[in-house]
Amino acid sequence: QVQLQESGPGLVKPSQTLSLTCTVSGGSISSGGYYWSWIRQHPGKGLEWIGYIYYSGSTYYNPSLKSRVTISVDTSKNQFSLKLSSVTAADTAVYYCARGKYGDYVSWGQGTLVTVSS
Amino acid sequence: QSVLTQPPSASGTPGQRVTISCSGSSSNIGSNYVYWYQQLPGTAPKLLIYRNNQRPSGVPDRFSGSKSGTSASLAISGLRSEDEADYYCAAWDDSLSASVVFGGGTKLTVL
Image (cartoon, rainbow over the protein chains, first blue to last red):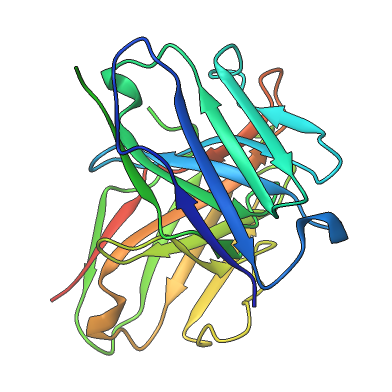
């Protein structure tokens, strides 16, 4: 069974870039057939989809975040990553990586809290 | 304001049947599959229902999903204390700003 694990700084300063990595184990990203997504959850709030990537590098982002988001994949390390630029306090959230595309997220990471604060 | 509308809370007693609604529009629920998630405190969401009414392996048949037009429902029968959690619906939205959209979540309390 595939497992996902987020990693990255838990504290980011305002205006800087948030960077997270999701390491996949128990399955290969490059085997194809699956999309890999980032989803976030503001404290005490609901879920917000950020975007997805395919092993080929094809991406699609939430239009509301598109100008600030970059998702990339490193098949050699079996990882995919999220970069969110020009962060503000409103970007403070638990960030999850997951396998899935249109809402069919069977596998999730445990989530990592990122706080934006000076 | 979430694109999909859920009641903020629901409750029931052990053994009861509870339903949670999810209302959307023609660009999301009306034309795409609906997914349901259960989120226990401090944990990642868990997929309960996919493609409107399908259960992943390991999900008890006490959980069932349905869809009609631009609305969907999650039903939980034989309510148990461990079902106390937040529940979210999700769907792809085909509008000009195409994206995955979620409901705001429903907090289920087992009395």
